[in-house]
Amino acid sequence: MIVGVEERSLVVEAIVTLAYTKANLWTFVLSPAGVPQEIYGPLSRQVDDFTRRRLSKRQIAPLILDHLQERTNFTDIVERIVEIAANWERFELSRNEFEARATQAKAQGLLAKSRLVEAAATVRRESEKQDQDKKHIQARKQELSLLLEMFDSWAKRDDNTQERGYLLQDLLNRLFVAFEIPVHKSFTRNDGAEQIDGAFEIGGWYYLTECRWRKKLSDTREVDGLSGQISRSGRQAMGLFLSINGWSDNVPALLKQNTEKAIILMHGYDLRAVLAEEADFRDYITAAVRNLSLKAEPYLGVKDFLEQNT
Image 1: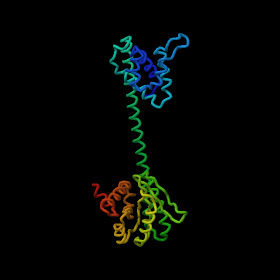
Image 2: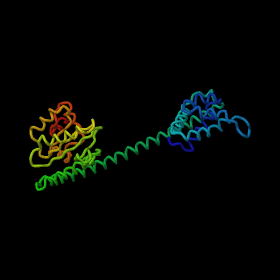
Image 3: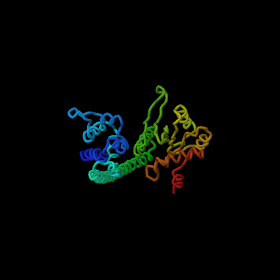
Image 4: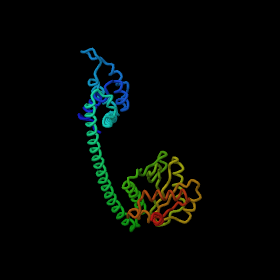
């Protein structure tokens, strides 16, 4: 509810007309609405400078609102007072029942209008969110299409494997951004003695990445390097070893022997399938980690992943 002139006026009328005595006003209206005693108490005893009498409820009402306006729950209290007025049944407590019923009718109308406004705002926000989601999806599709084209173009080259490795790191980072996954680009640590190709975060876990794009299959020595980096990281660290042309048979066997079970493998075919939108990258990585944790298998191919989800 947005508190404007109409809402403030209704709260004043509710305070004035619903309960005749200040004691009943506090018991049945102000206290249930959440008005603090430290605000109402002093005001209920305050004396008018001119009449030398205690302030009337009509004098107290705007002062209550002024004090409440400084609090973060101001809107909530106003809304509760309106709801109390709309559902008022204790007309025997009112000095003038007709005035109290008129206040009740105004409160019901205001509450209905406020709820219609809030419903319309909710619909508008949902529509805006859907439009934004569509834009994000479209932007992701365009980026993945471009990355797929780049990947296929690089796959035809074999002249500079080191340069292709750097390009692969950049492609992977752009893939993370496309899926709105927090990413950390290549960095060094331990006073520059250790080079990390990159890292990303999913579900509170940090994945150090190692990328290989060479003709020969990756071997256990390369995986051991990533394993050492993980062991020198925090407890929430795992590893993603991406080898475009695959790895020797000894690599999965070595990872199975490791008690930590902290590295998942990814083949070039799997990366291309993600770029071609055959599989959602976030879902695929989550499934690969589950496969490692439950079945002690470091590699889950995209084909197997898709079969599990059909």
